[in-house]
Length: 466
Image (tube, rainbow, N blue to C red; front, top):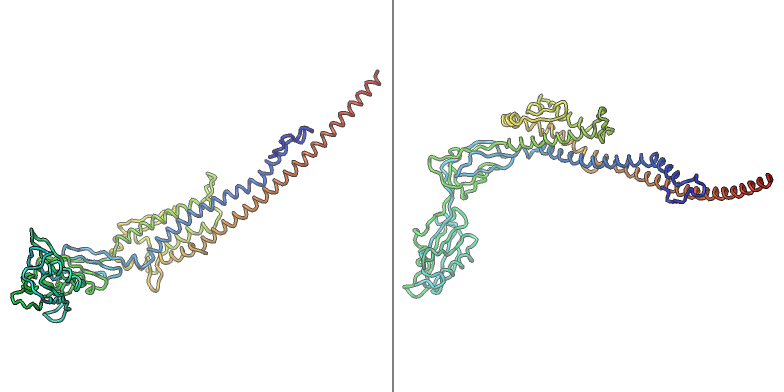
């Protein structure tokens, strides 16, 4: 708009209001269409961002259903207090029975009580204690030696044992009563026996050896004996050194928790995880419907309401729904399709899932569903094909990315046009304002000259009439 308020004062004709009206008309004809196009371009950018998010979320579901890991998941039923079974993905689907569980145990020694843990043990002589860990039937194992003297305390022996053999056993001092302390030695591994022997180097024949002082020369103080784990697997007797058995069944770990009575048994079933597959399918249906609904809103024109979707003129965006639906409704070479598993797409593009039918079909023949969904080495499954299609759309340098670049390029071009046209109009009206001002001054001078001439004519006419 013109900012020269005095324009038109001289002539009364070339006013600022005329310039303002001309500028409004030019803005409406030149600037406003560009502003509308820029607003539409911004709306397309926002719509693309939303659509891209829906596409990526949908692709994640497609990728999961088209991959192998989902179908390799396993569930284990029939665990009992006696055993816990864990099955890795891809382990064999099977059932088995476990009975007669007898857990592997650690060797535990409980020394004779002493009245003080920090005072020398009464009657103790001087010598060397040898601890053997891991011998089988008295053969083998590893020897560890600690020296002791008449001044050795219970705490001293505990510390020496832990220092020399701490990688194989744990020694601790417990206060079991008032003025009653006991040294406890526990093996760190099951099925590894611990034995003690010593040589008394003291010249005093009445001096006691450490084994005698602690009672480690008496098997009665071996309160828990090391032993292997044993159980029956489908009636076959199994022995292991640990309570965690991972070498019996490929991909399966059996943990023995407690001993069984003769009447007890654990009937274990390892199956494919139909719950996770059904849950993933339900998530896919939700993501499909979200994407489908938004694509419909963005591409459909409602002539009765006069409303057009933001991408109603974009054939590329319109093709997305068609491509996805075509793959999902295809029938494979065996005559199977998603429709056989309780999945349906109505004429409005809304997908529904009958979870009960889906789960029932999957449990009945999991391999058939996996073949339809994921395919095999020779054939692509439904979701493998769809994942390939989605990869063509999403990702850097793909179709969606190129479409986004086109939107950005178009907007940059519009901004450039807008800036040029606005600058051109600003320059034009600055020039017109200067010209109007000059013309107004000229008209004012001419009016003034004409007024003087008119006065002279009028005066002459009055003189002549007298």
